Image 1: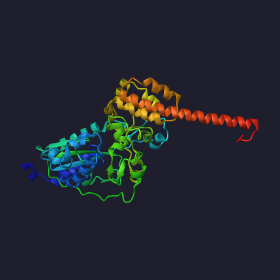
Image 2: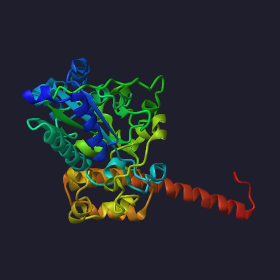
Image 3: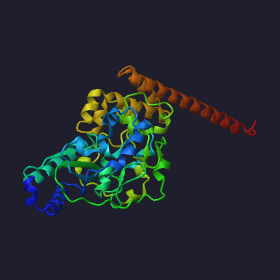
Image 4: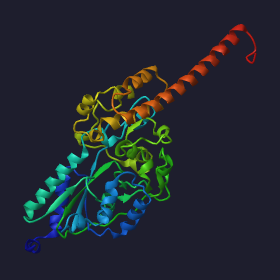
Amino acid sequence: MSEISSIDLVELTNNIKAWGTALGFQQVGISDIDLHQHEAHLKEWLDNGYHGDMAFMESHGMKRARPDELVPGTLRVISVRMNYLPPDASFAEHLKKPEIGYISRYALGRDYHKVLRKRLKQLGEKITASLAHTQYRPFVDSAPVLEHAIAEKAGIGWTGKHSLTLNKEAGSWFFLGELFINLPLPVDSPIEEGCGSCTACLTICPTNAIVAPYKVDARRCISYLTIESDKDIPEALRPMMGNRIYGCDDCQLVCPWNRFADVTSEEDFHPRQVLHGQSLNALFSWSEEAFLRNTEGSPIRRIGFEKWQRNIAVALGNAPYSEESILLLKERRGCVSDLVDRHIDWALEQQQEKQQATDVKNRQQARLIRVIEKGLPRDA
C-alpha cells in the first residue's frame, strides 16, 4: 500500500486512540498477530473437553490463535475495552435473596455485541477516512478470536486466574472488542501480571469450574450451563447454582481488583427494571411473548424461552419452600417442552422435601409448646 509510506503511523496510532476514546471506549491498545504461544494452552483446553458442547470452539481449530488466517491480510489488532458496571448493581443483595432471579450484570442492559460493534465500525470508518485503502473487520465475541490473549498483548490488562482480563485501574467489569486491520501500526507492550498468590476466584466458584489457575471447565461453569448448554443441567450441579438464572459473577465479585472498577457512563448498560431484582415467580410466569418483549435488544434473548424457563425452574427448586412456587411450577408443566418439564419435576421434588422438613419442624415446635404449657419437663 503506497499510501502507508506517506503517512506517519505513530501519529495515526495516536489519532486512533483519541477517536476510540471519543467513541466511548475507556482504553484502546494495539497488538501484533503472533499468538503462537497460546496455541498449546488452547489445544490442551480443547483436548480436555473443557469447551463442553460448544462445537464452534473446536471446529475452528487453531484459527483462533492465527488472526491472519481468520482475516487474510491482517497485520494488527486494535483491542478496546468498555466499562459496563451499572450504578445500581445490587450484587450481594440479590444473591442473598434466593427468591430473586440473579442475572449477570453484563446482561441487564442492551446487548453489548451491538453497542461495541457499532462503535468499532465507526472507528474503522474514521481510519479509512484518513487512509482510503485501509481494510478492517470488527469482532465482538462473535468469531474465533482469542480476545483475552489479544487484550493482554495490547496492554489492556492481564489474563486473571479466572481466565478474564484484569486491569489495575478498572478490574474486570468491561467488555472487549477487536478491530482486525491491515496496517503495520506501532504496537503496545503487555502490562505486568497482578494476581500474585491470590486464589479467591478459584475458591469462590460455586461449581468449582476453575479447575486450576487459568483453566475453566465450561461444563461446570454456571454461565455455560445457563447460556450455552442446550441440554439438561446436571442434577449434581443444580443445587450449587442457587438463584443464578443467567450467568454468574462470583469470580469477579470476589476479585480484589474490582474495588477499583468504575461505574459505566453508558446508559445502554444500565439495568432494565423488568429484569433487575425481579422475583423468580414473576419471571417464571412470563409467556413466550412476554419473554421476547422484555428481552428485546438484550443478550438474554438469544438463549430462547425454553432455556429461560429451564434455568428459572432450577432456581425455584433451590428457593425456600413456597406454596405459590409449587402451584406455579405445576401450572407451567407441559407448557413448553420435555426439557423444561424435567427441570420442573426436579424443582417440585426439592420443594416437596422442603415442605416435609418444614412440617417436621412445625410438629416439633408444636410438641415443645404443648410440653411447656403443661409444665412438664421438656424431655417428657
